[in-house]
Length: 238
Image 1 (cartoon, rainbow, N blue to C red):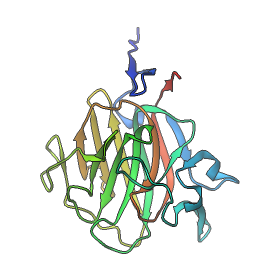
Image 2: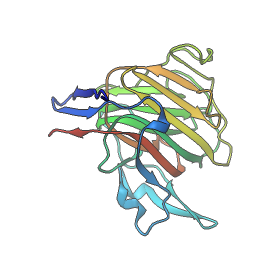
Image 3: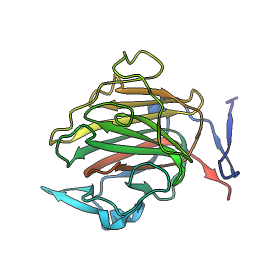
Image 4: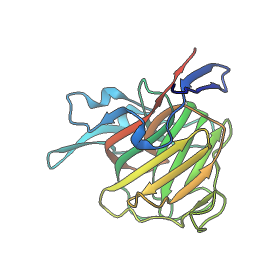
């Protein structure tokens, strides 16, 4: 007989959600979302904070989602200005893979971001991938009703540790393969950049065990393509 576990999570809003527990390995979890932006209305799947800052671009016949200018959105607490969330998808455990391209010139905080565990505009996680790591860049951040806070205070330690991050990365002009893994039972968050075997960031945090997923930047421009999410869907009770 197969044993099935259930996850019940109380939101910051007081609502409750339950879902079957997910296998830890991405190959064992079902695909719950895909986007290659080749359809007739690919933006219909997304909820941007500022719709005027997003469009579909065509690069030699291949379409992609592009955040092509700064957003007019300004959050209540210090956190990224420009991102778009996937509509009608809430997950607990997941593995997100995609391609990302920065469209900004080099400077210390040149970044692109991934968003997850999104409960509302003031409660979520995001991964900030930047040229140089510091207290406000190139880390996993928690937004929990207060200005964003890094979950990885140490810089440049071996990834073998429980919480660590590299000193930064090089965006250049091309596309990069990125993977984000969330294991809610262990509380772990792992981020991979081009090398899918060794993470560039590894953190642990228990605050948000499920939420929405999105892409964007703190305040730069970039493009996204070939998005695949394997995971476990959760249906929040309103």
